[in-house]
Image 1 (cartoon, rainbow, N blue to C red):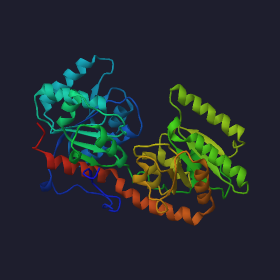
Image 2 (spheres, one colour):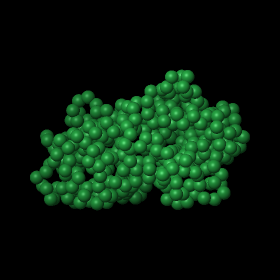
Image 3 (cartoon, rainbow, N blue to C red):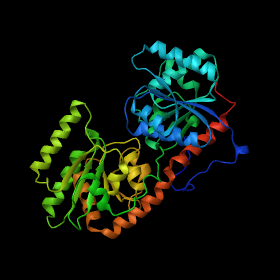
Length: 406
């Protein structure tokens, strides 16, 4: 891991926003970004935000998306040029269309974000006969070796491989047949301006969510998809522990997010509803469901809890910090790249309910600590501004131009 390049070490704060450099210091690039995911989560939001930020820096960017996917709808809403693929068509037809597009348009580089798109891009580039540089951003941890002839061929073709956290980079270093000096640690970007606390009191945001909070009771928030690894059960158990062991302490809690169609997630949602009733917390915990705008949900909270068992990064956590919220998080995976214990938040061991309850209770009781950690969190979150992250990608892209891998 010592040879992997960290673009911004934790002890170094980057500028607040990296503006586009003067035109003579950079070239206008023709960029093809591929993300054919049908979902809308942290990965897809990051791809959309990054594409939008690179286009705003003057590059000719085309986003390859799945037709009628959430990412395709986002791209249309913000005015990005897209190349759509019909998921009902044969894989060979999609490969042929992409190959012909590359031959005709001659992009300066191709940037992919999923393993499926990596294979598709590699094949299309090979068939097109071009030496266009290929970049991959890896958003998930990797625990198994990716060897074999074709994997070696594919990864040898990659110009640069980005990992969104030290945790992800370690998995790549251990399991991918690529030299460590071609791996870069570059975190996802967030739209920090959008997450600035909106005008008006938190009561306005709470009213928009349809909840009524008794005066003076701090609001504890959790934002994320309801899935087993996110730690919702530990969150409920921690609140139950606070309620039973310190009944004089008042609090309210918002659980923002919904379960998907997966049966495990639906069972978990039902279990959460049952536990809230059985624990006698129905008057304190509000299941909000999914919201279209995370800014409103975060504005309704006084502190944010991120009890996930393991995260490659933790985009919701970074957004909460950008919104100026003090955070409690489990020190697992990429979370330790984000939160500095006792300075920008509080870290506890994963699945440790007593430690989680103690940290939450500490923030509920100590308003001054909440304000200090929230201010520090907001300042630290500047490093993840999407405009700054786009500038770091741009620097690499421009530096590498004209020197693609064979």
